[in-house]
Image 1 (spheres, rainbow, N blue to C red):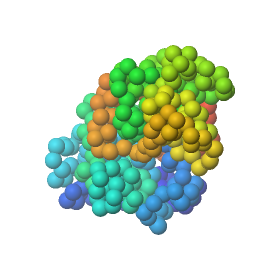
Image 2 (cartoon, helix red, strand yellow):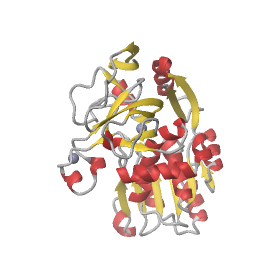
Image 3 (cartoon, rainbow, N blue to C red):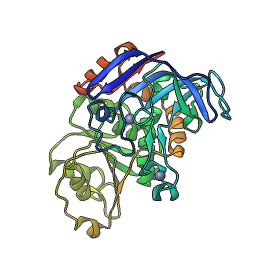
Image 4 (cartoon, rainbow, N blue to C red):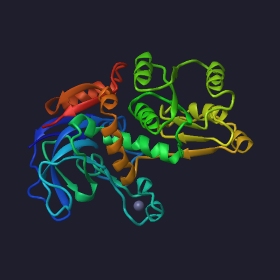
Length: 343
Ligand SMILES: [Zn+2]
Ligand SMILES: [Zn+2]
């Protein structure tokens, strides 16, 4: 079968490799159709594996963790049939560590990820543990590939305890920020979206943001306080990965409010810890998603297909996957979600 193989840092090649045979007990064989490229793919691709836990041998690896596929061999899996369109929850938790024991497998300290520690979707066929395979009904392949990033947004809002009618400030209007916007609007929230790129702000507006903005402080605080009648928003979600947003969010958020940090940043920024007790705010981290979030994301996308479809800016066939990675890593301003079309 054809696969895009990351041979070593920075080196991806299209190769003819031996694919999986019949499904072994506990596994399902699928034919990937669409695979979203995500910022986290670049770490493994460029050899920056220090942040990833659990495996020594990353290369060669078939990447791709935002996978839409069709079931080819359901093996002994219950509830799945040949021909079903599915999305893959890419996370394999250990089941024993403290987060696993307390129902939070998404932050398992020994987790393994499809497309990182196990081969992923950039291949004509893929063997996956049956428990990671979720039927998505009649979602199209692009929409099904977006279930994974959408589940990250669903999890962030669950962590932030969003309730209907609340005003939410979302920093960042990339794929995760926009998915957070769509999920928040779907839950009856009102959203103000902050992003430096005009094209992303326009898209945020089209997807239901009440206000979109990009102004420096102190204007941003003034604008947000006007919008919230001086109280500040009860919920702020940071998806931009900019370290400076956390101190800003801690000042912006309403007293008794919540700040959820989803964006990964390696930078630092000085925070005024006094804001935490002064306003008794909750500052909450959010990582990946649970299986329940994944199920909720399937429903979210099914109910918001047009909005989600607006996020797919570029498509590349599998044979051009290396070029798709190069293109995505150059961070073109008009790109939102770049998808590799496989079968
Ligand atoms: Zn991703
Ligand atoms: Zn664990």
